[in-house]
Length: 140
Image (cartoon, rainbow, N blue to C red; front, top):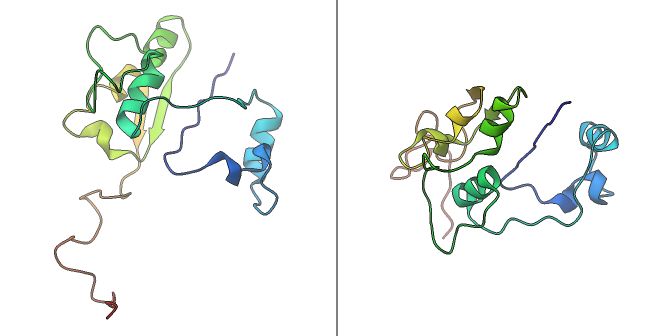
């Protein structure tokens, strides 16, 4: 059995052909959906991103009693449970919060993981928020 869990922070399902988008060309999403189970009525109950990830790992709503934070040692974690059952789990992410304070217990729950740097607010690549990029023009 293969299980692929695809999670995007800022991609709304209405922009994907498997969910009815007509003006978007995304053949790989269409191919994946054609060979997979798609969920037509699933909603995240805990927002923003890190509470939502904790919810997806544990299967429990948590935002009303627990905010932004790591998985706790007592938390059951879906990828960890799958790994124990012999399913190979691997995380591919550009979400740097997994490596920051308060999020450092998510990625080791997978058997292996890799991180693609340089996205939204990543200090490794980017422009200082204090000094704007020289090519940026301010509106008057």
